Amino acid sequence: MFSDFVSSWALFADAWVSAWLIAALLGLLGVAVLARGQMFLGAAMSQAATAGVALVLALSGAVSAAWIANADAIMAVAGATATALVCMLGRGHREAMPAWIFLASSAASVLLVAHSAHGLDEVNRLLASSLVGATRGDVAMFSALLALTVAVALTWGAQLKTMLLDVPFALAIGIRVTRWEALLAVALGSAVGWSLHVSGLLYTFGCLVLPAMAARELVGEVGAMAKLAPLLALAAAAVATVLANSWDLPPAQVAVAILAGMVMAAKGWRALFHR
Image (cartoon, rainbow, N blue to C red):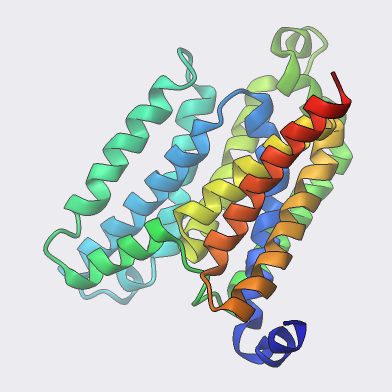
């Protein structure tokens, strides 16, 4: 099994490394999403990013400018970031706006490319998730995003933890909550948007919420979750790429299945040993 993986490394290295980096990056950021009680935000951001890609595909059929044809990643990030900003900085029910954005973007993603066979194929690929097609540039982008996210978490982790868990107290001690929420929204939008562009909705949303869910069952405390969730996500992604290559299965779906199994196993562990 592992020998098959090694022999295929030259062909799929960029895709596999991108998958591992995406898992670690979104696993870390997902702790913030879970701590805020906005788990559906990940689905809304992913779907808004898909709508951004669909818009580029629709425009590429009508406009011949070269930048239009290469703007799908930028529009994916823009769609996800706009969604995160609206949902995190807005006031009101935390799930109402993400639900509206998810539904509106789902409809727009298909309607924008309804008369384009290539566009529909691309949208369907994003919805189903496929890691094939990741490039060395994607590896560099995810490496930079992960390094920056880890650096921020290590430097300002205490402020972020306070802001996530107790906004009134954070305001009382002088933490600039609105600024941190905006920065968190941009970080989430950048990571989710670029990940959606590379790996599709299922893998992106799965890596964002499932590792944090498993970590919450195992350790509970936000600081410990931030350490454990990326490791769980990375382990699942690494195992998934090996198994998928050996058994000729789609790696994104294998990874999400493993992560979902981790959540249930963690729930069982907690029920048995932490009553």
